[in-house]
Image (tube, rainbow, N blue to C red; front, side):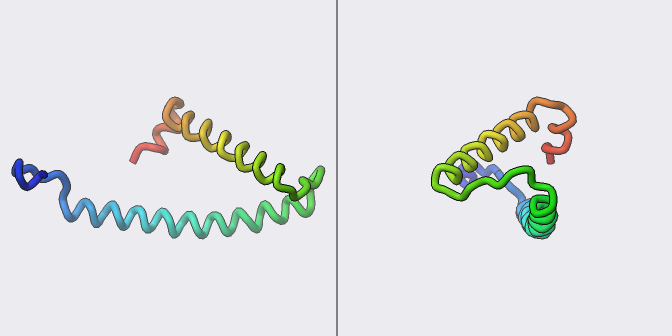
Length: 89
């Protein structure tokens, strides 16, 4: 479509730069997620106030709760200036 209208919708160099940023972010996410898993596991094993039972209901409830928390976190990222400054690339 862009060739028919003689418009350049993206630049190859920018696309490669964006891919590199995305790959870098995924790699850093993997490292920090692994580190957080061990830290949270240690905190839970040493300081947990109660144990959450493993059942189908618990998994569904925690999935929905996690989704709700993520939704509000992302929404605040768009509405609160300090969060938005970190969200805009």
